[in-house]
Image (cartoon, rainbow, N blue to C red; front, side, top):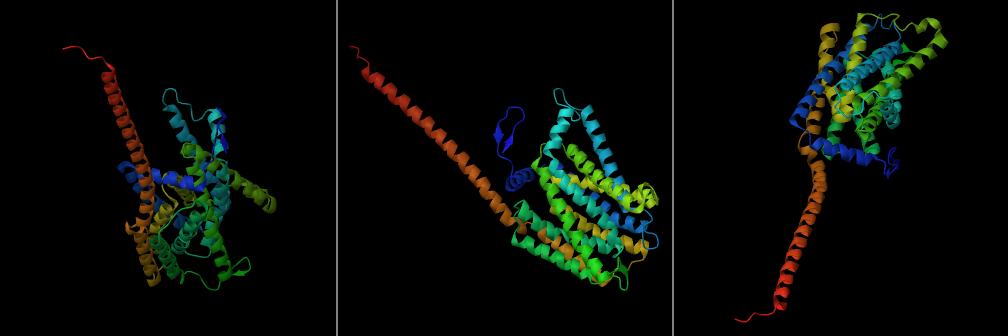
Length: 401
């Protein structure tokens, strides 16, 4: 139960199923302008996600990094916090008369209380952002992008378990096709004869792959649930807290590194280059776009849009770094594209639409019953008036002719 801070009335707290149904109703009533903005989000996300592994690869020197990956993550979170503050200032200047300022102390405190759950995905994202750099030591950019698409299957399972999402059989088959396409591409991904941290590359690569897939999947599902469960809260308030938590966790990691490696590691700008600066800006923009996906769109759509970036990443890495586009990559991409078409086709959504239609049918039947009841009441009232008038006329004495 949730108690109102003003009137102290108690209401039931939103569960995962109610959050999902509320989002479903919101999704069914989107305008053409909103759909166009979603297309722009997908296009921007494809470019930014496609550039991310390329910029990480360009930042490597002799197969390693001269900078601390944690410092890149910290600066990225700081950039996103600055963006959220700027947008809140912009909205505060253009608020309507009588509206409460988004930057007032009471508004910020209330929003912070309602969005404490955002600390969970912030911690998971801090871990995942570090893993992105580790994965680059094992795989080339195109393969890293393909491996990240494994998150789609894990996210679908977590959405079903945590948010009670429903997927049709065709959509599960599409996700299986996605897994097959990624596996085809992964056959040529692991470099041979290299080791890291004393582990053979096969063991190290697969260990990091499991963590690399599981951690961000949990972060995405918790992030979507946290944002949609507080749908009335401004997205810039939620971004401020999410990125603020992320900056705090990365700063704690920097302090922990300084304890083991010495005070020199506190220099967060050490070893950075133009490529890392572009990487920070790209990661910040990518994170901001992701928040709009989680708030107004869908986690599955976000991951599939990232899948499209695989093509861009593969072609760009082949042009810039001379990586060969093998037949495995071409076949894997082909299967992934078929999976995307199958998952979002009208045929795969028949079951969901029928289920949604059953809810709408119940609502329409309830409204029809209420209308019929009101009509019967009106008819009964009219009959009572008519019978009352007849009785009055019968009681009235007859006048002589």
